[in-house]
Length: 314
Ligand code: NDP
Image (tube, rainbow, N blue to C red):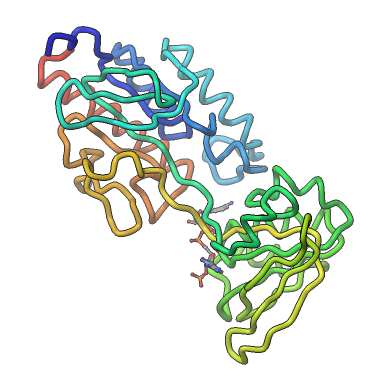
């Protein structure tokens, strides 16, 4: 361990609510954490509109603003916040080695993973081909380009309901394609969808192809019960079918479930590797809320601090 003295006490990967909360706790504990922001600084909340369910904001708060505030709070206590995406790790020996942007190597006595999750796609060839030319996974980012136009939203969860409601205020018509005969979305979000006069919910309906050569011109859909095919003319195609955890670089080291969520020891953020802790959506497929992510970020910092102390590394 000749280079062990060059290692950071704790390296935090990710800059959503989990990462920044871990940073606030770790820096206040005097651990001098280094935080790499990852490919989407601020995480998923930066592509959200109003956050209405984070306690402490009775009037709601704009998602990107909330993440600026999280960052400021982490900086206030001295977190070393750096741009950069962890592209590979070596957890086979200590100190751990993390490669940033495929070139810079960083050593760490402990690691807090808060790499979050990313939007899922349907996997259609036409969806990939027209991505950025009418196909999007973020209404708040791209809805502006579809003012006065017709769009589809794929999915039946809270994300899809939120996207459909948001787009209904900009677009002339929103077609929501739901593969089953019910929405998974919470009742309050469902109510907003049903109350929007220009949203049509197409039950038991799936997209089979996005139509158009250079830009989206429509969508070919199938009725999952009758198998009947039809077309809907739209200019925008918004996919809102959930998320997958950003955990690929940890495969082979960390125990994960079938969907790639990191397994933690119940009631803690311990992974199967001592000194590596996991928080936020990278390890949570059940709750996936900003407030639960922040909670597990706090737990990860406390777990790391206690572990480092027990190892006499701090
Ligand atoms: P969910 O996993 O909850 O919902 C995904 C939706 O997409 C389901 O309706 C699912 O259908 C559908 N779906 C999945 N795969 C396909 C496919 N291949 N083709 C067609 N449809 C598909 O994900 P969300 O992102 O909506 O929500 C994630 C979490 O975040 C939830 O806990 C949610 O409550 C929370 N959230 C809260 C918000 C808020 O409170 N403001 C806003 C956004 C999210 P099926 O039901 O048939 O499986």
